[in-house]
Length: 348
Length: 130
Ligand SMILES: [Zn+2]
Image 1 (tube, chains in turn brown, yellow):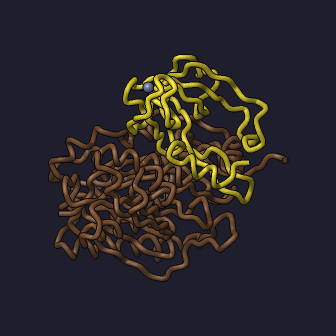
Image 2: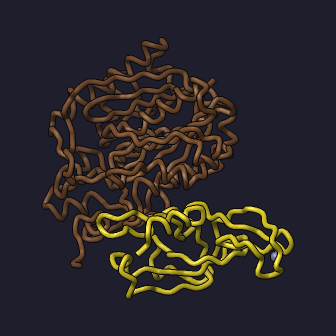
C-alpha cells in the first residue's frame, strides 16, 4: 500500500514574542495571547526563504528513508511565498537533492493548503505507478502587514513528505478534498501584503471547509473521531483547531500533539503538515492519524494515515519537530524583525 | 557581478558539495580536478563533502563587497569538515560572542545573495552552529 516513506521538518531559529509586536503598535498583548492563544512565532533569517527551508526539510525526509534521490520522480513545493514570481522553487529543490533531470516539478499555490495539495498529487502519481517516489513540501515565509492582526501569527517553516509504495512508515488509508469559491483572504498581483475578510474568515471559511473535509473523509471510510489516535488541523491561530475539533467531536488530547501554533505561529502551507510531522515523531505502529488542511479561497484536503512497524526505525534518523521548535531559539526585537522581513530597508 | 551561467556551472558544488577523490592517494578536491596535485594521478571517484565540521579560523567582515552590503557585519570562516577537507564560507545564525575556534558547525542551504532587485537569487552552503 502507498504512503509516506520519509518525512522531515524545518523551523528557523529566530522567534518574536507577541508582547514585542504589541508594544510597537500599542496593542494589548494579553488579549492577543488569550484570544488567539499565541505566544511567539518563528521568523526566517534574511538568507532564508521558501526554497532554503524546503531543501532542509526535504534533506531531513531523505535521511529518514535513505532512498536514492534519483528515484524521486516528482517534486512539488506548495507555498504562497515562492521567492521568484517566474522560476519554479522546485527546480532549485530538485537540483539540491540530486533528483534532476528525470523529475517532474511544479510549484503549487492555494493559500495555506498548498502543502497538502502537493501531497495529494504525489500520492496519486505513486498510486498510478507512474513514479516510484514523489516529494511534496509545504513551506512559507508569510508576511502580515505591520500592525495587522496577521502580523502576530504569520510565521515560517517547512514540512516535507516522500511518498512511495515500499518500506512505507505511514500508510494512506483515504484522501478527500472539499473546495468552494469563498473570498476570505487574497493578495492581488504586485501587492506586498494580503487582504482578508476579517470575521468572515471564520464560519463560512475555515470552519465550513475543515468540518466538510473531516466529515467527508470519515464518512468515506466509515470512521468516527474516537477511532483516531491523533488529529491535526490547519492552525491559523491557537483557538481555531481546538474549536473545530470540538465541533467534530475530537478530544483535546487527540489535537495537542500536532498543535504547534502557540510557539510557532501560522506557517501557512507548512502549518498542518508540520503538525503531522510532530505526530509522526511520537506515533506508534497501528496508530491512526487524521490531517485536515485549510487554504483560503477556499478548500480543505484531508488524509488518513496508519503508522506502520517501520516507523520505529525511521523516526530517530532526523531532527524531531518539537526539538526544532524548542531548542536553539534566538529572540528578536521588533527592529531586527522588521529588518529581517524587509519591512524597513537600508538607504542605498 | 555573478552571471547566471557562472552560477549555473557551480551548482553541483554550491548545492550538493560534489567533490572528487584521488583513487591513488585519497586526496579530496573541491571543486573537482582532472589531475591530482599531490600525485599527478588522473583517476578519481565522485564523493560528497561531509556536512559537519569545526571552525579553524574566522573573521568578521564589516566592509563587504557590493552584493553583501545588507548582510554586514557577518562572519566568514574556514571550517575543517569531518572528512578533513577545509572549506571557506559564511557562518550565520550565531552571535559573534559565541563564535570560537573549534566550534562545531554544520552546513545549511541558504541564500548567498540576490543579484540586485531584478537579477537571479544565488543559493548555496553556509555554516550554522551544530
Ligand atoms: Zn593523488
